[in-house]
Image (cartoon, rainbow, N blue to C red):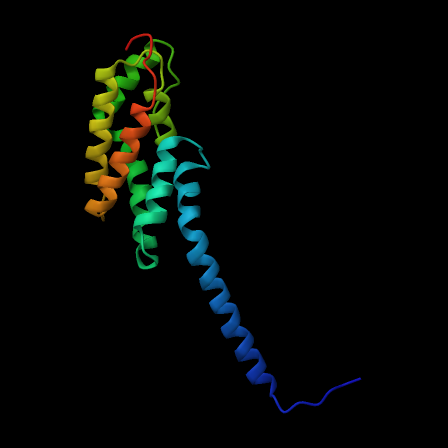
Length: 164
């Protein structure tokens, strides 16, 4: 059974194309922010990555999603180049640490290492704040403050280590 309609096939094709474009754009906007963390972190589940996720959800508008994603990736790329974090990690590695720090999960591993002192933790937090400020094109000041506060709170929630 066929129903005759007056809608041309061209109109149907164009309408479907428009619907698909809007659907894809909507899915991209909704998932891009969460995917940026997976890309930057390799699906890590550490509190520092959680800080980026929380801050991204509260401090990033839909127009800024691309910059936010780029900033996260650039932040992660700066981690292995930081001399102070590398020196602290070298000391920790000599005492049985996990190796080079290449991502946010690596920073968290260093912060939770039993050989860290309170001074070491403070130095790592200082360097993380420096990296947040050095990222280009750059986090906004509100984003930097929110990230710094969250990472500091997570670090302060750690109990003392034997070396503390």
